[in-house]
Image 1 (cartoon, rainbow over the protein chains, first blue to last red):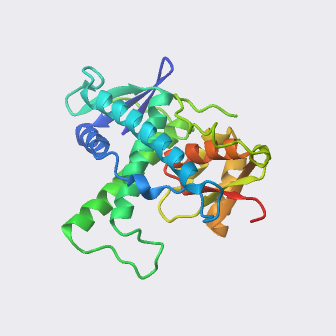
Image 2: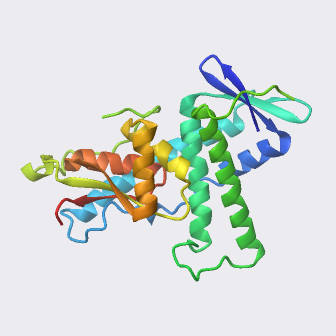
Image 3: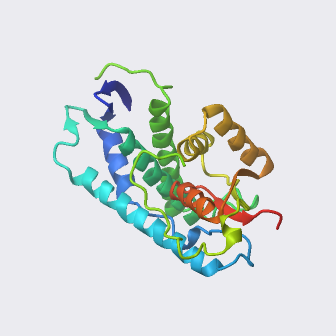
Length: 163
Length: 101
C-alpha cells in the first residue's frame, strides 16, 4: 500500500491488486464480533443493569448496521477504485478511515475470539489446523491495514509516488 | 463532549437516568487490557473519543498495558454510557463502574 498524498480533504491510497482483494475480503467478513461480546459493566449489582445493557446492545447494533451499509457501498460503488495495470487507487475521507478502522478491527478481534482468545490464558494455543491458520492470518492482515491507516491519519507515513 | 468524525448512534438512556445520583459524576469509564488491540490503535481511539492530545492518550494506553486497566474519565451515568459506547464501537474492552464500589 502506498499513501500518495492528499486529494482535496481526502487521503489518496494506492493498493496493489492483491492488497485491494485482501481489503475487500476483510470487509466482506464484517461483522465478526458476537453481539453479546460487549458488556456495559462488570458490576453485577449495577442499578438497572439489564435495561442499560439492552440500550447499549441496541446502540451497538445500530452502529454495526451503519458500518455494514458503508462496507457494501464501498465494495459495490462503481468508480470507487480507479484500476490500473497492477494497482488500484482510491480516495478516502477521514470519516471513511474511521469506520474502516472500526470494521477492520472488528474482524481482527472476531478472528482472535474465534481462535479462543489466545494470550489471555498462557497455556492456550492456536489450533494447528487450516481454520485456525486462516483466522490467525486474517487477524494479522487486519492489523497491518490498521497500522497503515493509522500511519497516514497521524502523518507518520510520507507520500510516495504511484507505480 | 468531543465529537467524532462521523454520525453518532448513541444509546437512548433518557428514561434510565431518573435519579439524582445518576446525574452526579460518580461513574468511572474504565478501559481494560487485552492482548489483541494494537497499542497505536488504542491511542488513536482515546484521541478520537475524548479529543485528547496524543501524549495524554499514550499515557492512558500505557497504563492499560502495564496495569491491566486505566480509569479514563469520571462522569454522570449518561455521559459514562456514551463514552463506553464510543469505545466499544471501536471494539475496545471498556466498561463503566460505580466510583467507590
